[in-house]
Length: 269
Image (cartoon, rainbow, N blue to C red; front, side, top):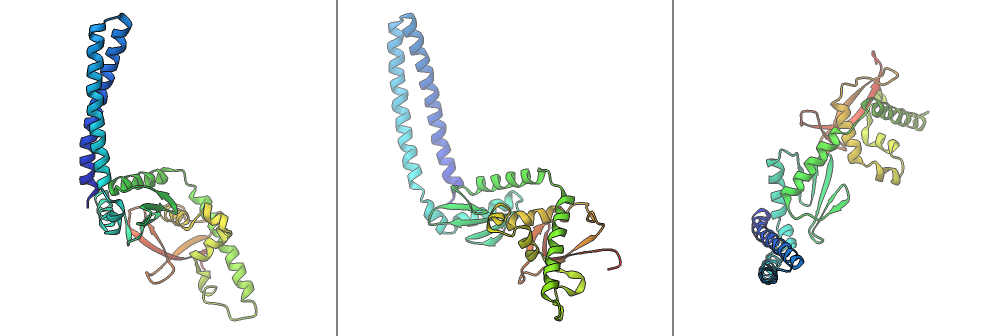
C-alpha cells in the first residue's frame, strides 16, 4: 500500500468536485440575477443547469466516499508500509530519523506509531495522519521553527551549572565519611540524566519540560559559541555509547553526537 498513489486518486476526484462546485456557484449567481430582474426564461435555464451540477457533484462525492473507504488505514500501518514510507520520506526531505517500528526519534521528537488506533504520537501528543510525506514535512517545519526561536544559551548554561552544583553537593553529602564514588572523583563528571532530574524535579515539571526539550537545548548549547558560565567556569561534555544512558543530539552540522556526562571546571582543574 502506498498513500501517495492513493492521494493522487483522491486529488483527481477532488479536482472534479471543485470544478462542479464552481459551476454550481456560477449557476446560482445567474439564478439570483435573473430572479431579481424578472428574466423567467433564463431563470429556468439557470435552475436546470444548477440541478445538473448538483447531480454531478453528488455522483463525484459518492465516488470519493467509496475511494476513501477502500483504503485500510489500520492494515497500512500494521503491514509496515507506513513505517517504511515514513523512513523513505525522511531521507527524501533530509530529515534525521533513528529507531524501528513502532518507536522512532526524529530529533528532537519522539514518534510512536499506534497501529490499533491509527494514530501518531509526537512527544506524547497524538495526531491523526496516514500520509507519511505530510507528516515529515510538518515535523521538518516544526523543527525549523523551533530552531529559529530565541534561545539564550548563556542562561541555559548557567541553569545547567546550578543543577550540576546541586547534584555534586548531594553526592558529596552522601559520600561523606565514605570512599568517594567514581562519579564524584575525576573532576565531577556527572551524568546528564541525573542533572536533568534537578532541572525538572517533579512529574509536572517533566511534563512541561521533558527529556526531548532538554536534549534540544543541549544541542543548541553544544553548537553555540558560549564557552563559560557567569562565574567563569568552562564545561565539557563526555561522550556516551549506544549501550549506556546517553542523550542523542544533532550538532550544528546535523551530525549525531552522543552525550552522557558533563563537568564544569576552572582552568587548571
